[in-house]
Length: 287
Image (cartoon, rainbow, N blue to C red):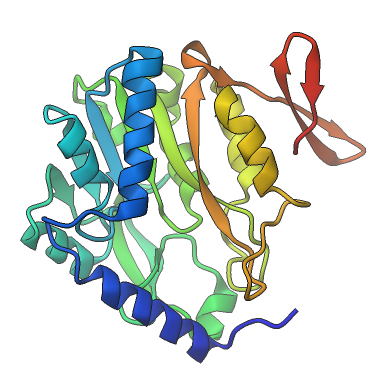
């Protein structure tokens, strides 16, 4: 299976980010806006559950999820965390609709090692560094200030929090810094980008099964409505794009009391088996 060269991938990323950098506070990313509308309607109409706060981890550019949430829930308080200094400056310039901090959310506090993409501010910004991607020239090492979800929330009265994170494979590390908030169910839902790829570029990304297993320990699972869709995305643990790279997809997680289906996780002969009981009479092994 042929992988793109560093130069080819860098060119693709530059085109993508150059287009996103044309977004302003008056624009909306069509895919993200559609996702936000579906999620908010699901909470408000289907569950009758309000969202009081958006914890926006890795907003990246103007017109993303924070803007969509503000459009649909004007009184929603938003806290944004963007580790890239240039992206942070852009978000401030475009009047980010909430409080925005130039830091990462991980499992650690203080200054941490991370990696910036081909042109800092216009590509991926990773707090989980793959030495292979450094060696191949996709990223360069740098440092960034980090905090944890639990530390951010500990002195606030915020509740009914929706967590949105697109942080390039560091989602599991971030969740390890949110254990108290998960235990007390201050977080009522999450939209996490789960990685299905296992290529050499992303060798340090967290695996989607690890995220599902971790969240199951705190009674968070996938909504029943999404399980069959989720099954269609998975083929032997990897969803491939046309160029042969593994891909990723956003997945919503809910606590059990709001309809999250908690999987049963077992290890048989050293292999992990995850089963979702989607009805009283049906056990579907989908992972």
